[in-house]
Length: 263
Image (cartoon, rainbow, N blue to C red):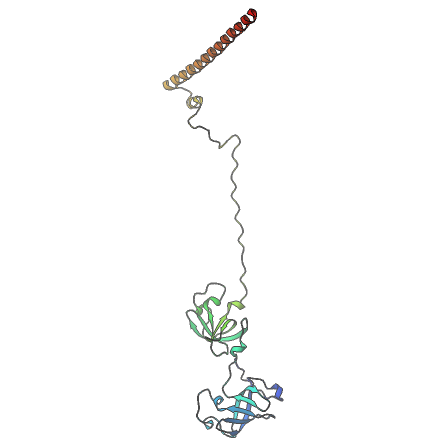
């Protein structure tokens, strides 16, 4: 944005571009105006710089003897070139990313806010660049006429677009670390208990069944008798097998002894 303060330079070195000066028109021509600035160098205004709108004649804007206000465009060895068209506060070549500026909100849209920063066109603060958190609509953060601080994040000179950010100038939100939840510990199993399954679920001890009811049923009595009979049968069979083995050994011994005597 331009400064309306008028400066009266005391030397040529103090005259800088965009400096606002006051002078007196001393001569007009078809091409422009000669202005006395009270310095060693005269001021010159081309006809194209007398007004933002096209004009046909210098006399439409200024006359000899008139006091005018103008801004410095360039300082040369023999003259100071002036303009009566207020220059931009920011030229395209003066803008750069991460530059911090003050601006004024001039228009709100659903996708963001346009901010006047003194450039050729307002810059856009997209809704995603208005805060660290979720912003539903720009109107939740700013309104037209608000003076805000912004940072340039991107410049497209060909498309004449300026992207701005408010979020870049805000402090980062504190991250609250959640405390880890305590782990659930498994309760210890009582001693003597085991999760080991029997290798064969079909095998079981008849005694475990009989322990369920101390008074056996007729079926259980018959079953118990059958088991006892089966055990007795296996025992007798084992004894017979052992007796047969002993008899065979006796016969073998006798045979060997007879052979020895014969020899």
